[in-house]
Image 1 (cartoon, rainbow, N blue to C red):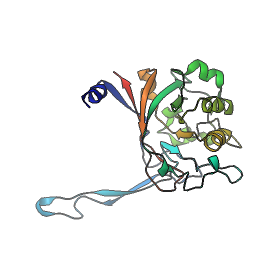
Image 2: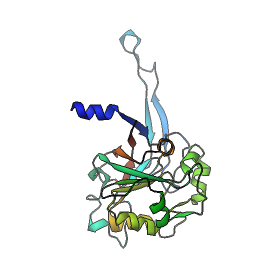
Image 3: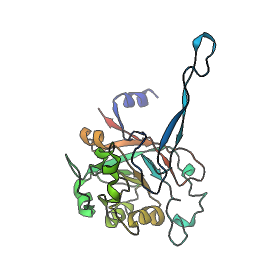
Image 4: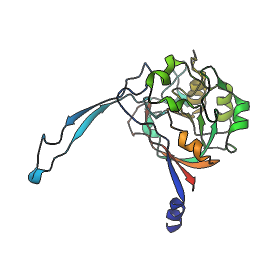
Length: 248
């Protein structure tokens, strides 16, 4: 136990989540995030002047930094490996503690909206070799637009990986692929081929709307990826609070 805490004390924790706020970006067909105070200080006062405040939040399960479960996409009515919606629910995904690798597809800037990240870019740009069970994160630079919802969503035109890159990653047995954009793949994509291949054909989870700026600045070749989705029974996705542990 002491050795474990010693290793943790030598690690830097990098937050990979974007913030939640009224008016934040969201995919147009998913419910937006909203928050309202339901109890103000002073509404109910206990002995000695003690009071508390609380709020109500509403959100879509695929809004903000989140993880796609294997029930999110289907093809011909079938989910990954013939699973039912209950079997593919996000509550079946436990806490994630895995090796992470990343690539910066736009060092110092951002990709143009029309750019597709292919296999050659992955082979050239990944920080370390990819192995089975890894979480692979891709920086496009669009995460820097997060506070400007219109620019971030950009009428659903964004750069991202292509289906050949998705196949290259799934062939290496990765657990999840994530990016700092709204859909991971280059959009518009009429058939959402990357989602179809990763979620339905390969059982690989997708992470979207990550904040990868600090991780890119740290420059670590590999890291420990930690995160856990909300345990919502039968849901097709859930908000995620991920972070990276990197060597100091």
